Image (cartoon, rainbow, N blue to C red; front, top):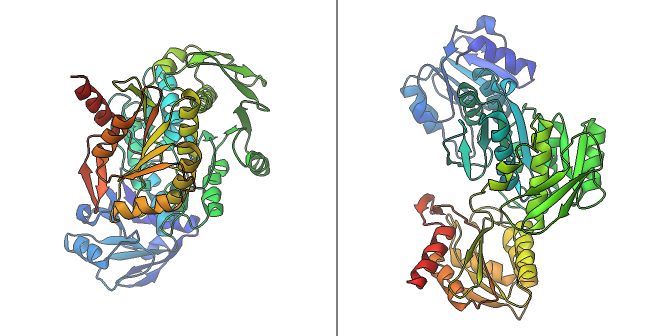
Length: 503
């Protein structure tokens, strides 16, 4: 992979992103006055930069010391939104560093998106579940030539998986991963696209073959993410502008606006849902459901089964069926793969020694928690809903009030605990959640040791109860004071505690 300085200038000028290019001979716009230079690496990590690299000075935490360090290591050319008082062969000054990085990244890696069928999911809840379902269907249909980028795990070869650091990777990492997937023989890529991916231009200039909009509710509202729900929703809706075809959940809030948005953009769309949709989802027994075609575009009408309980997971599976069929899969032939698909940390079901049901789920915002607790109430009408829950530090501050609301509506007992507190005091986060609890009958406990909180919830449960452990799923770390601190994982902790109690 290479990229010339001349090509850099051309791309930035074409997209109206170039302010100027500063060399020791003066300020320029075109390549005729620039030194001849070919880059064999692109990076935003100063520790990896050398004289063959194009280095991007990006991020709120960027310090000029990083650039100086890279220059001392041989760096000659950097890209930034303002010139720095440093000695460099060329400073490329742009109007938007993130957009420039996305466009130059895809060019450096040879536009790998053109060699893949891209399926993208967005929504407040269900992205990971729907992405895993789609990956399972397409893996079967393509002979295991489908890559996956999800909140939980990433696979670039259809076989090996590694932990994801962001729901949607930074643009340079995204295109490097796409190129690696193509090199590995992948023909399809299923990925989650977060609101932050559009807010921070990680997917700027990228068009998806199929976009799926699952649902929307307030989330990620904080000073460092989205200042308002309006901003959050607007960023989510950018997927409609950048997809060749959309699949919409007819049961989502603001569905009429989503349809209107597609029509205005002339983006073709189909819908799914329980009623008034092109493809109807009909619940059956024992995790079976049926899809009925009200539109003949995709012939997916059939009975299907998934491992996860809950109507919402059947709807996620229907979105996956439609997405896979849209990019050419015969989903009826691949439905055994859907039936066996497991989603890490999603609706894992265990039985306590006394017979109480234990649900471990990654639910980490209002809509996902509310849906999960409503399911637990419905499944255990004569028992109590006992919840273990915390909220993340340093981001998504609005979730604390949301959790208080959901708990007030649907829980009987809650153990408030730590969940990726980052640089905040987890007890203060728990107190903020508690401040928004309005149900005086809700029994509230504080236990910042998450393992002890899970143990306590299991101990107080009765046979007819449901214990809901929400937030971490199978994550094996907690973010504490800027470090990924090893953590056993909610599912593995609950499983171990139950086994120990059986001994």
